[in-house]
Amino acid sequence: SSNNSRINVSWVDESFIETFDMDLLSGKDFEFSQERTDQGIIINEACLSSFDLGTAEEALSQSIVLSGDTIRVRAVVKNHHWNSLHSEYSPAVFLYRWASVDYFSLEIDATGARKTIGILMRRQMTAISC
Image (tube, rainbow, N blue to C red; front, side, top):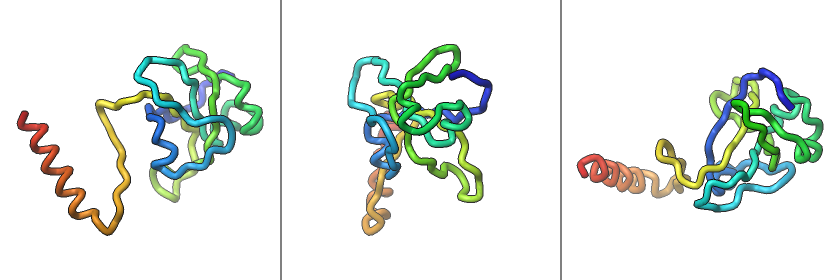
């Protein structure tokens, strides 16, 4: 399916859906790979109507054109708020990348948050001074 809808694109790894506690509605999560493989894309529910893909199950037999590349839909996740809870859900696409050089996410247990943040800040300062 192809249209000119605005869509949020994020590069994620195989732990992303679990880390953000997202619900997989259909299909399969990404699998770990250091190779540059075509694992397809994971989309959210908002993409279903924006790209006229039918149901979450029907979307698995569809493809989306992104920047001129036709990429098959691997899975569909429930909508998830990225910004404000007051914002409407917007179409989102997730592409696989095994290691990000720009961003990372981590889950911290609140009981040890202050200690964990201190460790991360010290490591960041060490990395900057190298």
